[in-house]
Image (cartoon, rainbow, N blue to C red):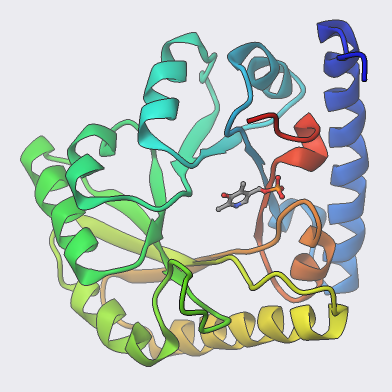
Length: 240
Ligand SMILES: *Cc1c(COP(=O)(O)O)cnc(C)c1O
């Protein structure tokens, strides 16, 4: 296969963003919300800075990266004026120091130990770090994210840490070919989100429900997601 030229890739990114925005708007209306109530994140792992910058020029104001090292090495080349960056990949405690203050949110908090380290490092810098709690909605053995059984206790423990602020929940559902099954995971996540929001726990602001990726963002939005994380549908398949 002949690789695409940069020009062709720029055009594709522009086109893809237009289509994705239309689909999100449609799904948002279907679920009784306004298109602007759903945030589109461009997931930029493995994508080179020139293409990320092009997406930003096309109006992207939120990007997501998985790996601390990859993000920090690309960051000097990114035109992040008016664009936020979130960490969405699994974070090891020993990398917290490097990433706190470099991103505006960590979406992948899945243990009290990690939250404590984020709080400690944030406090040392005199900042508060916004976080999402990652939920293992499919209860998969191999998956990152908090098990449902531990969710409420962990959230309550994190809520009292001085320098982290919980802003909502994030999930990556199990891979499934069955749309009905997938919808059930999204449905359950939304239920949990609404349930925790209703508890009005001090220092918790349950406002973000981050779910939906390239293959399933429309379904996620129909089920109440208000932040979708879309990578390959914007930038094309990832080349590792
Ligand atoms: C890679 C990734 C995405 C985006 O995946 P696509 O299928 O390319 O849209 C979303 N969320 C997380 C946590 C990811 O690692």
